[in-house]
Image (cartoon, rainbow, N blue to C red; front, side, top):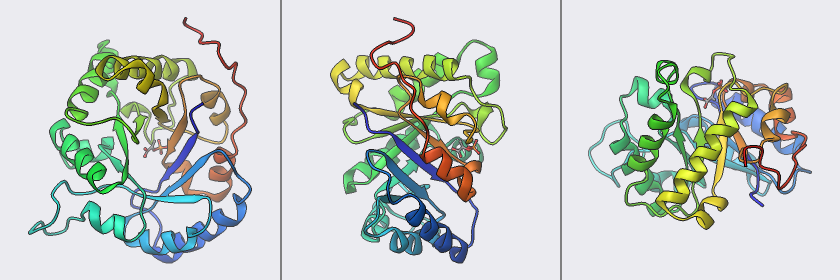
Length: 258
Ligand code: PEP
């Protein structure tokens, strides 16, 4: 059984003082949650205070990016080792906003994944097609390419994959649970081919794209959706708490399209 993982990607939101208060509140409100991983991913400057606020709790902390070099003259960048030293455990890599606004390609994403793994950070590797690619019937080709190129030369163990259709991010348009499940199953099958089926069964695949408190239960009911990467709705205490407390209604063992 894959352990669900719910992550909040705050993007460039919340001042450090707000981040600290929010994290403390989360620690209080979610202290009873077991058997689920909960992750907060604040901006870099808020990482130390969020790590402190979450210390000793069931909430883990992730960063939103790293640079792929170990160290050196790379003004403005932050290394994986730096994050590791302050107690960060996860890092989001290849988010569509980084691919779009900062021109990160699959090759760079691959280098970042390797760097993260080399220091023991758990990557959340983001993939997903754009609207026009989906309309042209290319969604599976795009995701396949992102997986093959992004994972080149990488051992899969201890990695989370986030399927985030770009047209669903921050738009209020969510993939239907069935649509998302179809892609998650495709991703798992592709991992099975690249690596092996046994390993692919262990990999957690999150869905991301306008996840809210009113659609989380139906998404998590899908057999291959193992968690969610949440942007907008993770900024609000009530909605994020409800998302973490999603209600399971799975037909374990019944894969709909088998
Ligand atoms: C995200 O940032 O990864 C995301 C899915 O954002 P939102 O939930 O706002 O669509």
